[in-house]
Image (cartoon, rainbow, N blue to C red; front, side):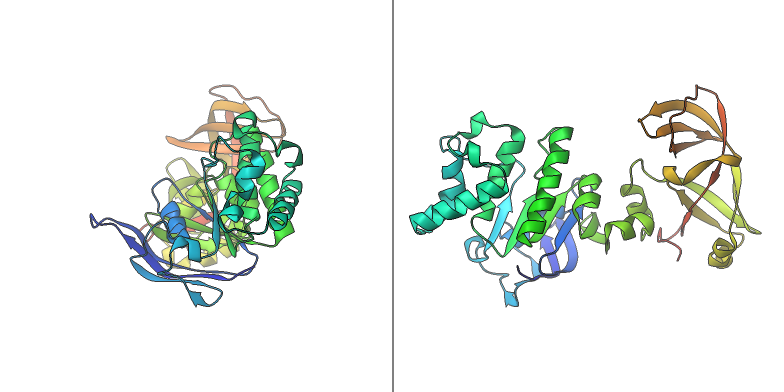
Amino acid sequence: MSELKLQHLEKIYDNKVQAVFDFDLDVKQGELIVIVGPSGCGKSTTLRMVAGLEDITSGKLIIDGKDVTQMPPKSRDIAMVFQNYALYGHMTVYENMAFSLMLRKENKNVIHQKVLAAAEILDLTDQLNKKPAQLSGGQRQRVAMGRAIVRTPKVFLFDEPLSNLDAKLRAATRREILLLHKRLGATMLYVTHDQTEALTLADRIVCMSMGRIRQTGTPLELYDEPADLFVAGFIGLPPMNFFDVAIKGGQAVNVGFCAELTAEETELLKGYEGKTVTLGVRPENIVRGGNITVDVVSNENLGQSTLVNGTVGSQKITCKFRDWCRYRYSDKVQVSFGKKHFFDKETTNAIR
């Protein structure tokens, strides 16, 4: 287990395009950090800088107190698991997992013990003599993880490792990665655009947008207390509903509704009296019964819950009710808002 410090990392390409701005993060020993954000936000570039596959324009990379910023990849003692597995098709599973140790000229008995131990952890013992083409996508990804495990690196890096798997395999492999982390107690940096992976895997999440960190915290902190409008809209599925509202005498007033504010919310927004702010409400925080009228557009039954898509006035809204219900197009449902989030219109930051 190792500590990892990314100190104000920046990446500027030769064409003067800056991909990463002032990325600053301390990763504790044994911590699983997930970097999440939309495509092109700089998360994979950051991971590649840690791996040594991209030069660091400025800032420092520290592993266990040692500055490795200028070290080549092979000297950083980091193992990376890629999206596309990167397995050798002509080699068996055993040979793929043993390959990096063979290059190091490790003792054959040591190699054998490490490969067998990794295969047992990943449930690959019966697959060791097969070629990658004979394996499922999930098994291939486990082989790629096994190849990383046998090296016993200081830090594991995962670059969108589940992107090529179907939904069922993604869920199963997520669980395997989580169990792997618990068993190894390893320090891991994991990149994904999938918020479900971030919320289920991470000790802490780093949410990025346009090359910058927008918020760092536990999954619950990012879900329950988003720092700004971007994080609020990116984390959570279905995404948060947003409305422009005027704050007037203990109420949030919109052209389509008038929502009563609690005493706590009124105190929070006392500096915004008479001004317009952005109100955010998660679909699961909308409950039936109240003075807000939703005109139903569609009804999606999900088993234990139902998504109701509709409009309030002319604005779209999504409600998530925790039971099975059937509404038809043009039905009207009366609702009220539970937990509300408020954001400053100019800065887009959460109003605390």
